[in-house]
Length: 166
Ligand code: PNS
Image 1 (spheres, rainbow, N blue to C red):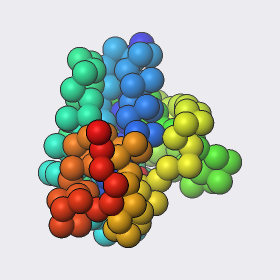
Image 2: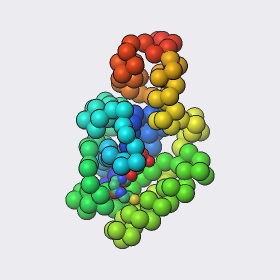
Image 3: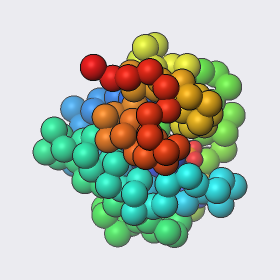
């Protein structure tokens, strides 16, 4: 299959995000992970840092690239020749927001389909917001995020935030 976009805020990337990217990489010739500035959210990590964290987390996937995009996703899809967006669904509650975005994108660019993959149940309770909240309060999120993200969270909160990784 062709080129897929995996867009998101990724503030920060979690194991759930990486699982969706890994599975997309199995089905598409090439995958672009797109770090987007969501106008509704004030990020903890700037775009450059989120790109760096993602690049480290997907370096084992040769057909995956990571980049920041500041405009409409459909414009990037046109530029890349991508006709699919892949998003993960953790629960039915995700669907309302995701459906709205999928339909808006398809209205702006008719050839662009959004495919949903169900999140691995192992990661279905994780969100970037929850990870940040737990890390902020000193909980160990090392099992829920890539190593680079764990390190970045510790740095952000001034050293060890809680329990230790092995
Ligand atoms: O991880 P998120 O915050 O749920 O991802 C939302 C995101 C970044 C995919 C969405 O806000 C997006 O695509 N923004 C890019 C700008 C755009 O194209 N907006 C219209 C899409 S409906």
